[in-house]
Length: 116
Image (cartoon, rainbow, N blue to C red; front, side, top):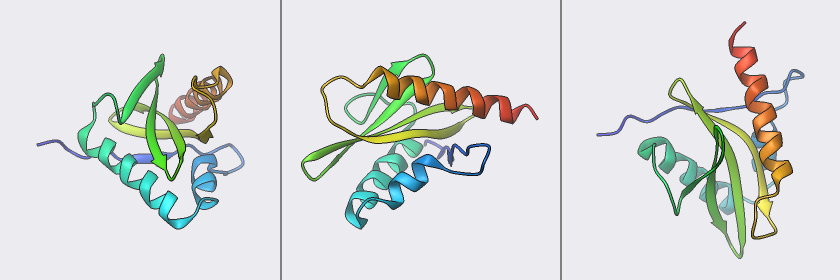
């Protein structure tokens, strides 16, 4: 029996939550679909493809199909928490290195904030 790991939204110093804000901009069914995929990962972690893929270092992605589009939510797991760092609609085969870099940068900021 797996224990559910909590998912938390990365928050900027100014209090913004980029992934939550991105989700709010999507339609209800898209939000629901991505939310179900995140919840699945929370219950089944650690898991791999096709639902999750490891990108680089501590960064993983939840892979969601929404209509004819592909959404990605980049996250890291630390202290049994799933930190939702960055999200986007995927437009190319390869995940843009800039998206991975942004997630990595946010994760480092989040880790730094945890030390306070």
